[in-house]
Amino acid sequence: MIKIRLALALVLLVALLSSCGIFRKEQERTNIQIIDPYGNSVFVSGKVNGMDIKIDDKGAYVPSKISGAPSVVLSSGELGNFIQDEILFDGSKVIIKLKKGAAERFAQFLRSSDGKLYFYAIGYGGYNYFQFILSDRLAATYRKRIDNNRDLLAGGYIIGLGKSLKDMPALNCNPNEIVVKLNIPADKTPRISSFEEVK
Image (cartoon, rainbow, N blue to C red):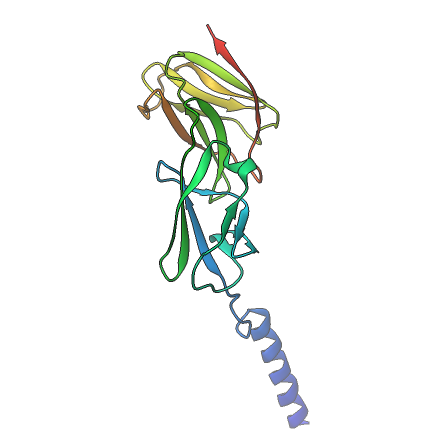
């Protein structure tokens, strides 16, 4: 009877410990860091050495230990006006640096490595107020003061610059290079369908 109780207790202890993950082997992974031209950590779908780049709460990765990155292919549809510039491997992670493409004026989104959005409006310094109509609805609204006179407003199917309410500190962005992280969750990058100057 005592042997049966001990065996049962041992089985329960093993079941409890295994449910906590003690006996589970940590999944092999190599972290991937994609950096935009402004030093922000972003996420772009693609492949490293033929393996899909995945993302979880720890960031971007490929599900295997690798010893280099001779082959990196990022989704051109998500990169938009950015292109791969440099690929580095420091022994534990792959670092992919992006640079601006040839377009002097463009607007686009990229996902951040923590599941939010970055908005880029490059070359629009000649316009005081403007908006972009989106093909995809944003999951939330967001407002950020860009400079002394303008706020970035985002919500629904629109993102743009409007007159500032002057109730928060300004980012003081270069008017020709507006780069803002939006506190809006996203599992894909919204597409921009049109531009409108607001007078």
